[in-house]
Length: 155
Image (cartoon, rainbow, N blue to C red; front, side, top):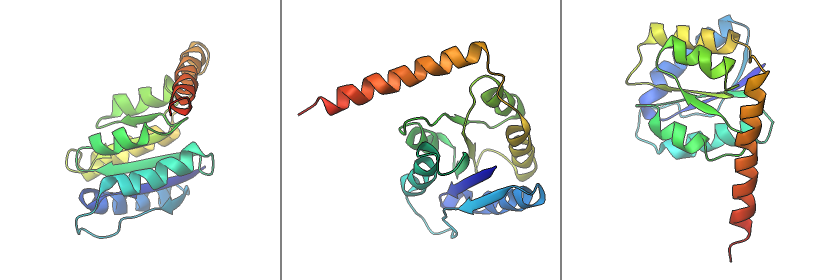
């Protein structure tokens, strides 16, 4: 598995810790930035990771901003992206089991380093259950398809 990771200035320190963890877990990562604590706009980095996941270039992604809310909003604009804001372990597990989340979003100012590492470990190791959940994900895909047709019909 390869994971794309990106953050804004509020997530730089946590991103470093997560990259170290993923390296220890022998999971390949592609870092889409930012790498500085100077103020940047989270959509710029959320877009890069989300586009990579949406296009199928990368299997999964991790995004970090101050609360995780902004990155979640950006990521879920992309077709096929199922980004889940997970600031505790149960949500991280369920986002994979039931929703097949392909982008994990963490609030860098909300979650401490140790908990964030546990969230990431849970998220990367939890499989998708499939079965009845596939039907629900198919419904989400149909909504995306319908909205794409609606958008292309506009003048």
